[in-house]
Length: 152
Image (cartoon, rainbow, N blue to C red; front, side):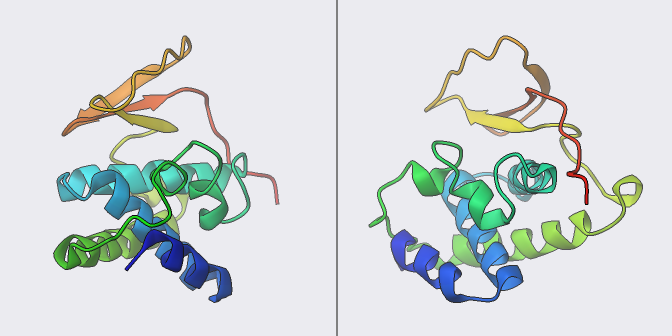
């Protein structure tokens, strides 16, 4: 299946289902070659960003915010053809969403406070105010700014 088809499908699905699909696609594109722990950490960054409201009001908004995650950085015709990696990404996304639905003090956080991550093979940003939280696989997780949940 192609990324463009997945993003179109997300646009017609109910919001919660669409968000799970968008997070799954992001995990596949960003971290399919990483450990489950690394995939969970990527999901945690996206969920933290969604909770903050700074990148949009939904997971699909967050992961398609300009130049933030792979869905906007790879060609729309990119095929998600590794079915095992896709199944793993869906499983990790659903588990991460369940974990993030817990009250903040009860969540199992892998990269506490991380709002960004980078893969050293493709990026070397120069954020001056970044604090390294963890390195998992070939991703480094950073707290670039302190994010707070949006006010209801």
